[in-house]
Length: 634
Image (cartoon, rainbow, N blue to C red; front, top):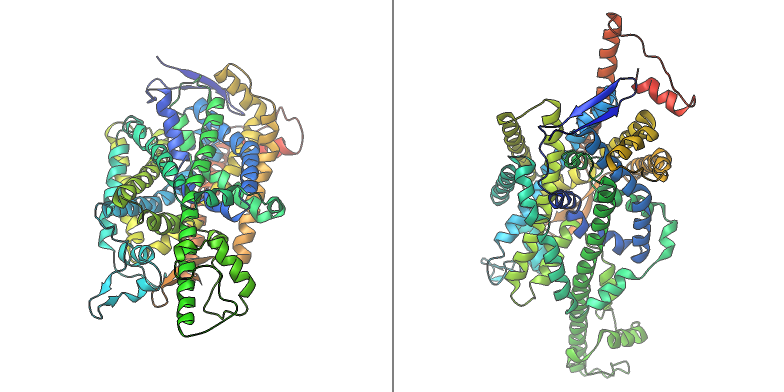
C-alpha cells in the first residue's frame, strides 16, 4: 500500500512525497535492533568507562544523563522525525527543507566514509585476535624467547606479554608516524575479510543487513552479561565497582568534563552521521518515533553502564593482581635483606616468607610507618594507584582485557567470546555507517537494482584500497589521527546546521505540526525551546571548546618506542598536521559549497527571468527567522 505524507517547505507549495516503492523494515524489532546496533558500538565498551573512570565516576554519570535528556534525546528525536517524515536519506531531507542545505547531507556522507575507513580496521584487528584465540596457551600469555640469546625477548620483558603481542606481533608498529614501514600482511588479509563481510551484508540494502542485525545487535549483550557474572566472581571485583560509582561532585565545575560528557552523548547516539535519518526513512509514516528516541537512548545509556560494570570488575581484578604481585616482590626483597643478617627494628610483623598470607592493607599499613627507612627498592603497593591508571580504546581491549583473560581457566574460550563480541559491536555500527553513505546517494541519484549493488560494492572496494593506509606498520597512528580529527569537528558543524534548518528555517512549529500528523498527537512544547535555544547553544559551545582545545593543546599522538618498550607522546610532523586540516576541511566543505552552488543556480535563473526574486513573508520577528529566510530561502 502506497503511503505519502504532505510536508510544507518554506516558500513552496505543498510537496507530496510518495514512497510506495521504498524498501521498508519487515518488523519493528528489526528497526529497533538496527538503531541500537548502530548507536551502541565500541565506544560504549572502551570510551564511556574510561570517561567515568577519569571524571568522577557516579558524578560523571549524572552529568551524562542530564546532557542526554536536554541535548541528546531532542536531537536524536529531531533526526528520527525528519527521516521518517520526509522519507529520504540525509541529502534529500535537508535539500527538501532548502536546496541550499543539500551540502549538509553530503558532509554527513563524507564523514561516514572517513569513519568507515578506520572503523573497519578495528574490526580487522578483532578478526586477527579472534583467529589467534583458537590455541592453548594463548599467544599473548607468555613472553617469547630470543633464539639468538636463549633469553626472554627484551621488549616483552620490559613491558608485558599482552603489550608485546599487540605492538609487535599484531601491529609490528614503527617508532613514529614518520616511519611508514611495509604493509602488514596479516592485517591486510583481515581488512579484506572485514570489507567482504560488510559488502555481503549491505549488498541487498536493509533486507540483507537487517537479517544480520538479529545476531550482531543481540549477541554483545549476551557476552556482556556472561562476562559480568564471571567478573563478579573475581577477587577485586567489588573494589573495582566501588571505585566506579564513588562520586566526585567537584568535577561539575570543570569545563573540560562538560565538554567530554557532551561529546560522548553526541557520538554515542550517532548524531550527524545521517545513519539515524537513513534507518528512520524506511519506517511507516505513523511509527511512534518519539517513543523510539526515548527507548534507543535509554538502551544506549544502560549498555554503557553495563559495559562499565564489566570493565571495572575486570580492571579491579587486574589492579588487585598487580598489587599482590608487588607485595610478593617486595617481601622477596625483604627476605633477601634479612638473610644477610640485618636486624632492623622496622621488620614487618607479618610472615614475610608467605606472601599469600599478607593482605595489601597489612603491607600498606606497615609501609606507611616505615617508608622513609626501607630504601628506594621497597615500594608502595596501592590498588587505588593501579585503578587510577586509566585505560581506554585499544589499550583496554587488546592489552588490559587480554591480560585478564589469559589467567582465566579455559582462556581460549573467553578470548574467542570477547573478540566475537567486539566483532559484532563493530559490524552493527559499521552497517549503520554504510547506510549513512549509501542511502542518501541512492535516494538523491535515484539508483535502483544493479546500480545500487554496484554502488555498494564499489564503495566497499574503495574503502579497502584506501584502508591499506592503516595496514602499514605505522597504520595505528593514522587510525588515531582519523579517530581524533576526521569526524569530531565536522559532525558538530553538521548538527549545528541541522538544528538551524529545523528550528529556524523550517520552523519548530511547522516541524511539530508534521510530527503531530505522523504521531497523531503533538509532542510537548518543550522541544520547541530545546531545539531553538538549548541544543543549538550547546552545540556551538561544544564546537568552540573543541576548537580552543585543539589550538591551545596542539595535535599530538601516542607512539610506541621499541627500545624503551614504552609509550611516549609525540607531536605530529608538518605533513601530518596538513593532513589533519585536510580531513576537517574536506568533511566540512560540502556545507558552504552546497549553499554557494544553489545560490549561483538561483541567481542564474533569476537573471534569465524564469524566477522572481524572493520576498520575505510571514516573518514573526526581524532578527532570527528573517535572517535565516534571507540566507536559505532566497
